[in-house]
Length: 266
Image 1 (cartoon, helix red, strand yellow):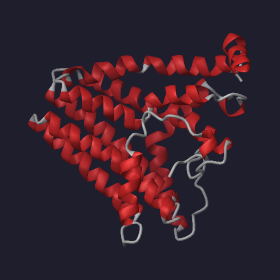
Image 2 (cartoon, helix red, strand yellow; image 1 turned 90 degrees about the vertical axis):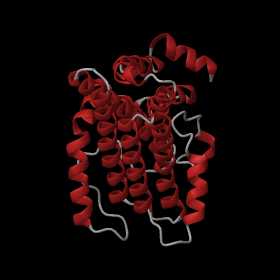
Image 3 (tube, one colour; image 1 turned 135 degrees about the horizontal axis):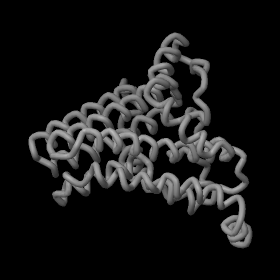
């Protein structure tokens, strides 16, 4: 079940796990399982992957990383199938991703000789990549009547959904802010006017989806399988340069020669 109406769907490179995730959600929609249970399962899958990384079983670790990505899609699918949107679930999911991303990179630092400073730079870069993708994707969804559980600006705790306690939403919101505030503010300062942009072409959304968490995990899994684990941290440091390229392209689409090209294409 897509987060967007069919007319506005684009090829999301980070969303390869959704078909299997949707199948899993379909099997669970009439059971006691909730999206929170599925989120907890992907946390367990990520922890298992880390253990196998440290033990040197990189292909097995890659399997559990991909499984984590599939389950990460399944929790949202189950929420939509059961019609149980949840801010607590969304923040729990995002915080879990944050902590697992840090733990994955910490494991790569542990098993290689690379400096922990580079590991921290790579972590900042990975989070910034995901933030710029989510920033544009949430703007896109809000504009075209897609899923609105995520908000463009997470500046204050939202009103609880039916079945949630406001106190729980407030608690999870502030934990989310602690994890993501610096990245959200950085991307917003780099592209304040994105929400007013006239054009968000599908090809651009497909390109920026290469920064989605699912695609990041796919890259990590591939590099583990081919024995390039020692280069993963350096790769993501370099990959982060594209953050600035995508932001410049987004601005160029709505002005200058790129904007003129888009108008002609339309």
